[in-house]
Length: 107
Length: 121
Image (tube, rainbow over all chains, first blue to last red; front, top):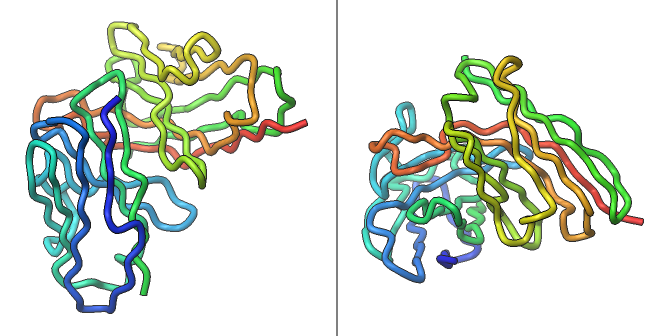
């Protein structure tokens, strides 16, 4: 299986701050990298697909970059509603989708 | 409006069986690639199974031979039949649609709210 490693596992930040979350794949996944946001008690919500494409309706303060094995999710100016857990997911191998362990973003 | 609603979770004894359902509205299950994904505090999000629009099915190694994914094309419902349940199957189970157009890069664009399965004696 392709292993996905996120860092950091948790992050404390302030409203208005710029934050970056990293995700590394154990092998080349091209741009088959997706980011999800999960708030407490809710299902994961797709934010970014194909490493850098923003889902319709997701604020432009969210952005994604990278290809191959190294990827980044950036939130340019944190808002109160952004405090959540973020997961990366590789979809390069269809019969073995894997997720990162998550990054909990806290105030 | 797209909605996925899971049901069927509960408390089961090890070795027991359970059927999870995912009622879908807003798109056609039989024309979609549908997944089950589970989540635990310890293991995070774990992909379980997928059924293609063709009917082909695939499973994670941890559930292969014990779980069966299927669908009812008339009722527009996705199922997960779980047999020989183990304690480590305890999780919140989500159904999720795989976005199959090339532009989506295989992302999971719609998710249900989850149903909790607890396996314990």
